[in-house]
Length: 69
Image (cartoon, rainbow, N blue to C red; front, top):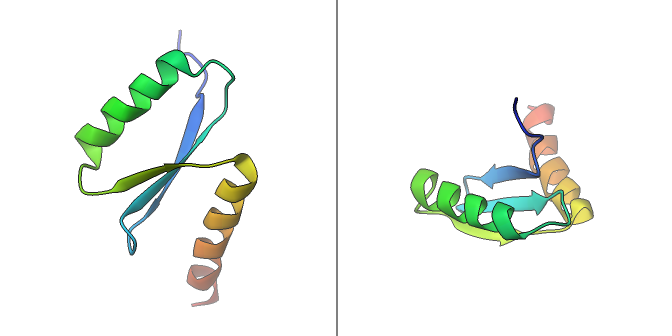
C-alpha cells in the first residue's frame, strides 16, 4: 500500500530553485527523504522549504505568465 504524499515541490527553472512544502508534522523521515531525492534528481538546484501560503504564491505567480501566452 502506498503512503500518502507528505510533501510537494515546485521547480523554478529560471532561478534554479526548488520550493518544497512539507505537509506533515513528523519531519524526521520526510526531511531525509527530501534531501536524498533533491541531491539525486536536481543537484544543480538550490532548495527552499516554504510554508503552504508561500508555496501557493510562488506557484501561482509562475503559472500566471504562462497562461497569458
